[in-house]
Length: 70
Image 1 (tube, rainbow, N blue to C red):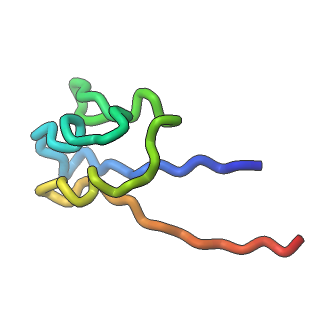
Image 2 (cartoon, helix red, strand yellow; image 1 turned 90 degrees about the horizontal axis):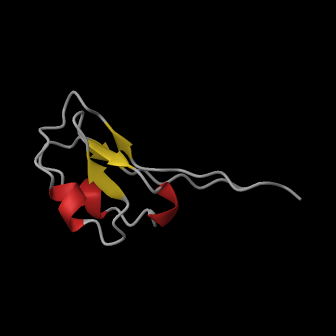
């Protein structure tokens, strides 16, 4: 089973500047009335561009590594 993970967006920190939306290399984000949203999450490659560009630190894309025994 493949689990999908997306960067998290803290809307209380987001100032809705739109940098994450305009600079997303995969066009996975759009701006809504509440702020940025992943409308096509399959396109998100978890590159971290949105996290890097966010001036308020509202977007986090932490990487988790896990191993499963077969």
